[in-house]
Image (cartoon, rainbow, N blue to C red; front, side, top):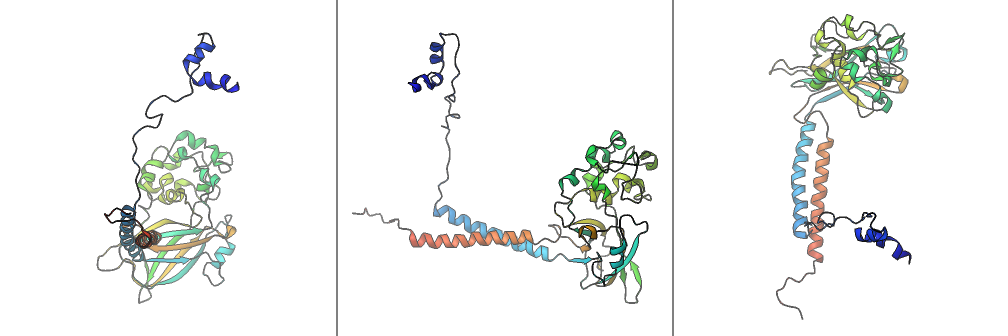
Length: 370
């Protein structure tokens, strides 16, 4: 009874609805249309997995992935890299006093020098990075604490920054430029490298500070308000970030193409890292002669202007020297991953081949069994 008064009329379509309502209206059917697509009658192809198709696939993947992985692993190992920690945690570290006594409120920078030795020469261009540990640039509120319109040179955003920049939006009643926690925590250590020759002479290693930022960041995402001329006037009425010692228009006064919002050290820092331990490009050491290495083996001194305290959050600072290859910097993970996947596929292929030959009970004889 309930079944007959239930959906029989609703699902039977227009005829049932018309008879129920005396022709006054039509109840729309809930059935899908009688089409090949909605009734799932379209032709389909489904692969049939057999030993003749699966086993060759495993062997082919293994034979392709293993050589690729070996090539990537060898290329990564050929990259030379040197890393030195200058945080100053240990008592015998030259930067120990700077690490213990320096803070964001310090008015004068602290200087320290770290000697080190390169056992092998570095050929081709050498890239100098600074590295930080236990610094969570990927925190949600930290990542959002910026104003991209302001960084792109928008005049209204310059005077009225986004509320996402709080609590680094205004200072002493004036808008902060650049605003936000990312800009406020700009890495500002100064690193200088010297080579000590056989005579004990201290030779300066030239460090190139331009060309370290992404082209799209430099020419598209970051722009100075009103162009690059007379930045003092362009940024008039704004305040420097709280932890900065100088305003943004004094980051590199000697080079108008590297000052203000388009300063490449600033741009590199504003591209936040995904992990708490990261490195960012600081300088490039260009190769000058094809007959001599860029950095010969021997003794070096790293002079540091210690401006960036990290012990308050148990952080670490380091300087990295590295060459690169066609696949980028030193990273053996990709090669190891290819080798691992290829080896697993090849091993599974062998195991499945043995199982197939041992337990295959199909009768391949043309005779009809009794």
